[in-house]
Image 1: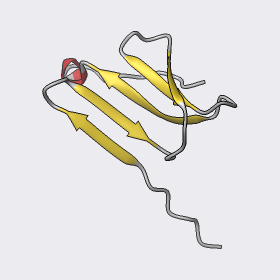
Image 2: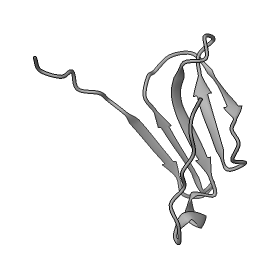
Image 3: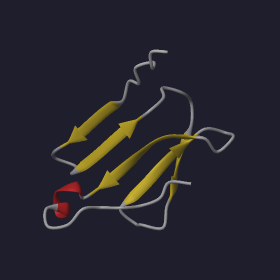
Image 4: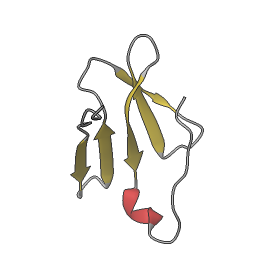
Length: 69
């Protein structure tokens, strides 16, 4: 059985040094994570819709790893 392609929307604002990745285009809101640099976007049931990363250019020396709830 063929897998369904997953579309991901990625948006980067160079001036704001902000990266946003959305898995689903649905209504939701951003909430904090354990990392001050990362916010996760969730719907009203808590399902993950995407995430954002502030100060993305500061990640040049090491990767960012965080669990989304």
